[in-house]
Length: 251
Ligand SMILES: O=C1C[C@@](O)(C(=O)O)C[C@@H](O)[C@@H]1O
Image (cartoon, rainbow, N blue to C red):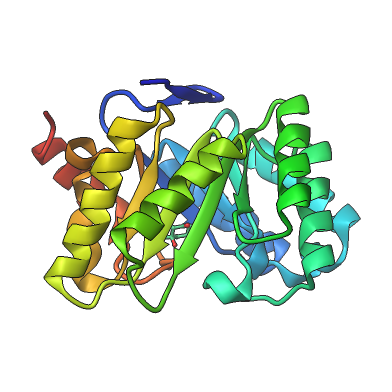
């Protein structure tokens, strides 16, 4: 099993790591939330730049804010994510603008890791993965289904496809409507974990999916998202609850 290092943390060994999303919608909010997040001592901060409309329409401003953010959090690893509206984000961009934004994130090293969604032009996604590696950024490739849990084979296919495209860490989030949906996600996670060497991140959202957010060490998910204040997805636990639960289930 390979491990992936993001700055000073290692995915794929020990307890699943905890990421806290920063969903500030202007520079002040972003920097203030960063201080609160830092104080809660997560392993990683996810900067959800789709909440920051000024920055995504003005890349120079985004770069300026990123520098202030780095100062505010010191050595805390930063994952930069633009979540498209189709996949649960808050802001719409054209396909071309999304891909250009990710390129800006990479070539200016706005974080230590970048989220790249699977479902975009495959050739350009592949180029962005290579570019990220040239700039020494870890690639977390993602797919989100806010409607349902895809069939087990579909989940496995998507996670493996991400690995084939060169993602360091394949990630999939989906919405269960029943206990057996939750089992489908967990089964797909366990089987993919056994089949490929990359650390994975998976979760079922909503209340019935909460169990998947705390049991990653058992089923093969290497990171979980917890909230400090505002959540960025349904079913997210607070960082305290998440940490306590993970410790309680520690192998
Ligand atoms: O992909 C994910 C996972 C997530 O959607 C969740 O369900 O916790 C939260 C998002 O901020 C993050 O980008």
